[in-house]
Length: 362
Image (cartoon, rainbow, N blue to C red; front, side, top):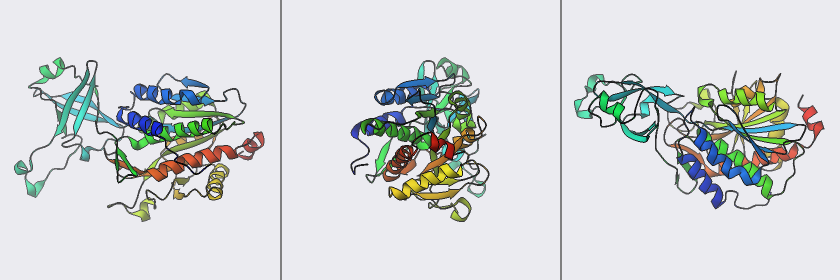
């Protein structure tokens, strides 16, 4: 690939719009429309399923099928209980972190639109410092400025309303992308950029490419479990995020070593098919794309597991984007890593040449 600026202004405009849109688990559809609209010039057709997974397809009539995949959903909260005083108590929708909640502004999604609220917390002056009570799922609550439960309901808020954070995209020090929900809308962005590069570089693939933006990963890989049965792929290359383990309070001896700016992280795990993984690492070495390695024990904890163990077994691999502060509103990734994940997937696809290659993965 020619040495040039990989991410265009159009790419970055799409990324900002895509990230700033709320896409909580179970409510991903508005984000999927933004994603499909961006991809429309670069693909042949789209597939969507009952729960909102979106697939952009290149060369749909080909015999062999390759998936490149990210997931579209972000963590959030549900309204679980409304007190007589008009305060909202919550339960998780995905792995939302209760410790970051106090003092955060929230958006409560209702049929009448967004209702603003705040996760309140007692002032430091009023707390017993000898017995400080930490934030817990059963003591954090949202104040929407209502005087009682009746006023809350009049505002359109009810049990089951989904709650997201409004924190938006920005760039630190020119090359660090910061936002909520980089986990894993960066995956959806990166696979979309692969499709753009294939189109702009006029690359013709000898297989069908299924660019898949799955839903409901955050509550158990559910979207991937459904869509893999629909596509029935031969190969799946999944991209998700992984922890930068160089930040405080993380032990690399337990978590492994990964760092933003040092390249994509290639996974070693039972669900990762060895020959496909070797093709990825060989490609990285040949194309001089920096990469890191991670060992993931029994499961990857990503949609890789859903694809790998479906349809009698699908050759699957995981390429992760190192990220700081996962499941907070200030998730952070390095621009160079984003570009190198895109390059690595793109160059690996160009190595998958014909039917003989697919036989090799068996």
